Structure formats: structure tokens, C-alpha cells
Image (cartoon, rainbow, N blue to C red; front, side, top):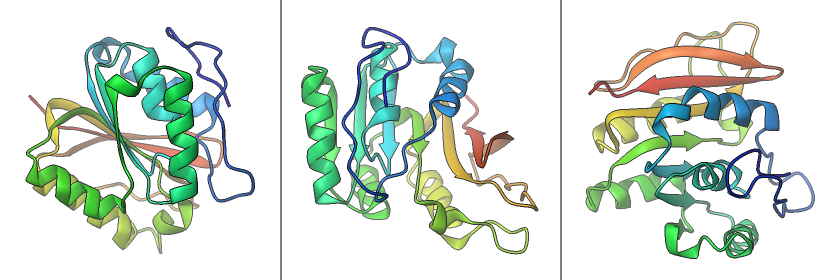
Length: 195
């Protein structure tokens, strides 16, 4: 896996062996950052279920100001720390070794806000059931909205598995669903928090 564009373009990232981490496809990452191209400079980024850190590190490569990574697996956290160090981004990053929901509660308590939130949860947590959003996805969206973690004008992207019946996500308070894009076997759900 490599960084697609920006100051770290072409740099390879370490990844755990086995199937414990499913990195976002390069095509999907490139599509995501094409969507936010005009808003990434100076952005505060939250990378949930960070894995190797590919999404947050790509954002930093493209000019984001800071990135907060959330990853609960200790082994994967060590690899993520190595990726951050290899790119000399320690001063621009924060790594929370915690479950995503617990981390969101902590960040809410700190009154943190982000201009871009990206989440790539394990697909088994997000698989739609009978055309409905999974309970885990609803909980994730609710916590982000209730915690006011997405700043006004900010954007939220969640990668989810494609399904025969693709549910149309509802809006969650200040979080407004924009559209869902399909890339192979993956969906990219796009929400905004209007300014």
C-alpha cells in the first residue's frame, strides 16, 4: 500500500500480515480525496478504525493540519506508529488506542471538532440487513452527531460493504446524507454538516 498524492506521494506503508486489517482500496482513497480536494488544506482529520493509517496519512500528505487516529488493536497500533514515524508526522498526529465508540466519547468530552472524519470499520459490523443500516453504523453516526464532532462545513465518509439492496442512509440531526458511491465491492457513504 502506498500514499497516492501530496508530499509523501509514492511512500509505502507497512501493513499487518493476515486478514486482520482490510486497507481501503487505492481507487476508493483517490476518489474520496478528489471529492474533498478543495477542503483538505489545513483540515483537522479524524481517522476511525485507522488500521495502517492510510486515510489519515494520505490527508496529511495532501496538506491537512492534524490527524487523530483511532485503532483498538495493539499490534496494528504499533504498525501505525511506525508508519507515522517513517513519514516524520509525529508532530501532526495523535493516536488513540481505543474502541471507536469510547474514543468518540473521549473526544466529545474534550470538545474536539474535525473538518474531515473518515471511518473504515470492519465490514461485518456494517453489513446492511434487509435493506436497513446496521445497528453499529447507526450508533457510530449518532455518536458523531451528538458529540458535535464534525465541524460546520465538515465532511464525513464511511466505507461499507456493497449489498444487493443498498440502503439510503437517513440524515442524523446536523449530519446530512449527500450520496453513496459504489467502488467494486465497497460503498462510500458521504455526509456533510452544513455551515
